[in-house]
Length: 268
Ligand SMILES: Cc1cc2nc3c(=O)[nH]c(=O)nc-3n(C[C@H](O)[C@H](O)[C@H](O)COP(=O)(O)OP(=O)(O)OC[C@H]3O[C@@H](n4cnc5c(N)ncnc54)[C@H](O)[C@@H]3O)c2cc1C
Image (cartoon, rainbow, N blue to C red; front, side, top):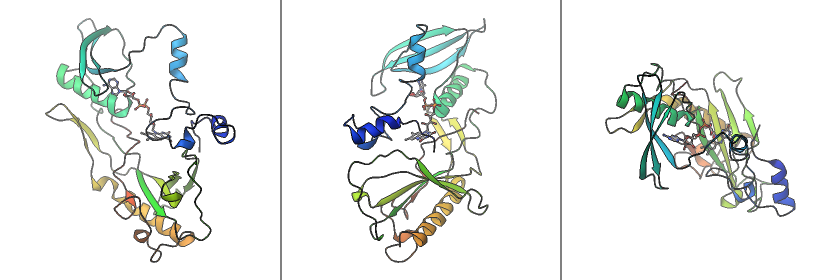
């Protein structure tokens, strides 16, 4: 699968003592060395133009449209706990929002509520979790499966496709999880989103998501089907070939559809 980790750096981590990043399990909460993140790509290029000022630790509260068609942005300079240190405003002719699916939608919905900012009706709709479900297998009993040791790359690079099976349509990314002496296989299962959720601003001004078990019931079913299949063809479940018997990572039968790290939609 395509990946934004620098595999040259990864080779050096393993072979010639470069700073460990992927092989030091830095992935989910950020990556200090090998990831080609924005500070190495777009932000670096943007800074080079000399035309860009980056204000770190600033939160956009809301936007107002002025009579002369310019916009005023209400900003909060914040500390690392999110507390406001200073309030600021910026006025601009054009604004481009890049606050991610959740942040962008939140800013627009809040601005509509607070300042009657005109926004399309679709904002807040068509939200989904990218059909993501996590699933795990405990591979301790698998003959030939040995611990791979502490230093493994946690970058996912492979997946298994079951996309052409109309009854169980999914793609399973193999997400390395070097815990329990590595006797664990972990998968990010990507399904279709069949029923969309909605984003809205609650009375207390916080963003809320209308999304529940109905939205992801088929994702759990697909994950169970997948784990059973893996048990049959590879790792024998501890007490037979059922997915429930061969799990350790996620408490509800080794499947967790509440983890969401690909929030998509809301501002399509
Ligand atoms: C753990 C994890 C693993 C992932 N793995 C992969 C992967 O392997 N492959 C892949 O393709 N995708 C992956 N993704 C998804 C990918 O990271 C996102 O799709 C992508 O980062 C979205 O980019 P974005 O610029 O739209 O939003 P973001 O990267 O979310 O950037 C939005 C920015 O806006 C800021 N912001 C939000 N609200 C405000 C506000 N009110 N004021 C000011 N700033 C604000 C946020 O702080 C953030 O810096 C992963 C995500 C997570 C969390």
